[in-house]
Image (cartoon, rainbow, N blue to C red; front, side, top):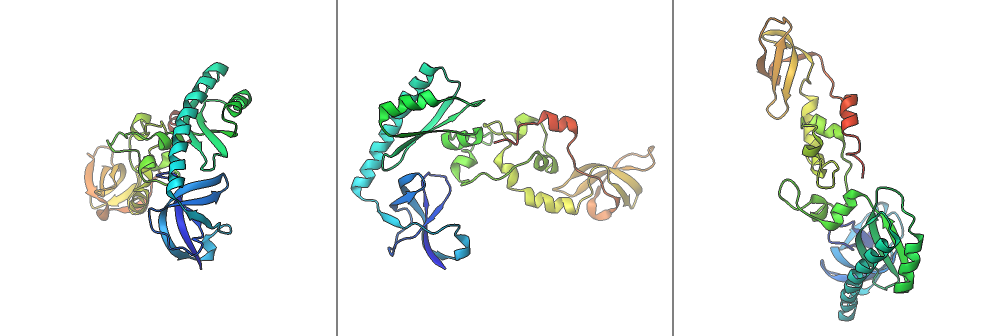
Length: 288
């Protein structure tokens, strides 16, 4: 077992483990630690605890110190520098006529690096831009292209449900979401209905997927051939939540009827799959 603390560097971001270095550090405390990007100031979101060594992918780096008043002042100064850098970078982007959109700027705690996050439709040659920025700020410059999901997570906003974006509110990491999930949940495959503000599939499709998968295992699918007290027939519609099926009798002259899944036996089940037209129409919704 190893004693660790969990640290976040963004309000909703990945949690990184560090060795507390013999100190008892409370939840919410600010700490100075060394990361791959340099020295950073983060917030403790997991106080001292022990975890199995198997959960650690690399040797833990120790906490340098608990942040002092002077450290917190440095953090505030860096935030001002980030705002200044954002404005200057936008001016430089316009000057070089680059087809890119600046999203955010981060300054490491030790002022050793400025990171500029941007989105762009295509690859951008920003070598001259980096030279310009380096001459202004006299520090290491890194430009990082991000996807539209990452942009939404950074900027935040309100979803169609009226609540703040999940990615900006509580999701530390993006979970894989697929069009197949929407199909299995019986949702309209209209892109405007199943995509978020980022124009990609809504993260919340993942939340109830396991429950739907359990229901699908015990429910006949559309086009299934089933046996019912009224004779054999084909399933026309399925309501996974209520378990009710609309069945058309094998005799085409008979009227369709509603029956609960517990009253039928599956002779040959149907299949949930996306058609080529659906795949073509929804191409790109799964991308990051």
